[in-house]
Amino acid sequence: MLRLGTPLLVVVLSGALSGGLAGCSDGTDDRPPGGPGTSVAADGPSGTTAPPGLEEVPPGYDESPDGAPPVADEQLQGDALVALLRTRAAVDPGPDHCGPDDVTGSLRGIDAAAGTRVTTLVVRNTSDRSCVVEGVPGIGVRGTWGSTFVPEVGHRDHDAGGNAVPRRPVRVAPGEEATLHLLWSGALAGAEQEQASIVVVQLAAGQVPITVPALIDGHAADIGQFTTLSLSPFQPA
Image (cartoon, rainbow, N blue to C red):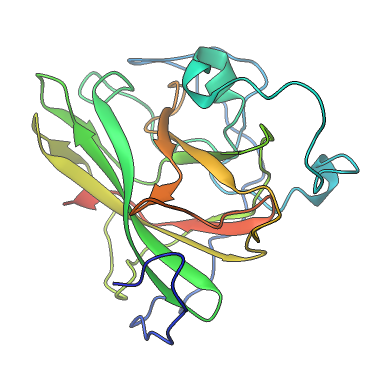
């Protein structure tokens, strides 16, 4: 397992780099919000994939800002977290779906090959009830300077080993976990650029996302403003 901060090795990820990103959504989504942990923010994202948002950032985005520091990640709540989403979850919530109060998230382990990183996004059921995660979640990224990142986001129907991952409900008992593979590539963040601080993950449409520190084995993930992201569906751990 390769850790961030060490020299990159040429690692063959069987099938990890094969297959393109899913096509972009037309931005239309008429689903009403609902289910546990929902938010009714009117300006949230409307698709499950997204093109790069090159036109959405102001001049000087790549320069460390002057003035007061941004609001701390842990102080963000509700609609402030929804506003960070770049894409929306692919499934409607039901009574059995996990909500933001049911799980915690983390990034675990990393492999690398020629400009592409692969990590496992883990959600752990910390509640006292069994609940379900399903399909591809919504995702967003906040940077260390407080910026909302605008990455290209796509979906994959296979994991980092090239194995097909069906889109089906995954029931997670208390104390158990579900996982998906998160890949990033392209415009990786350098040491002097704004890097990811947190990743926000929306488990079902309309929900407030959970926050996941953008740390892997104590090292910052080199996800930048225009890094390309790709996610596989949830699967049992």
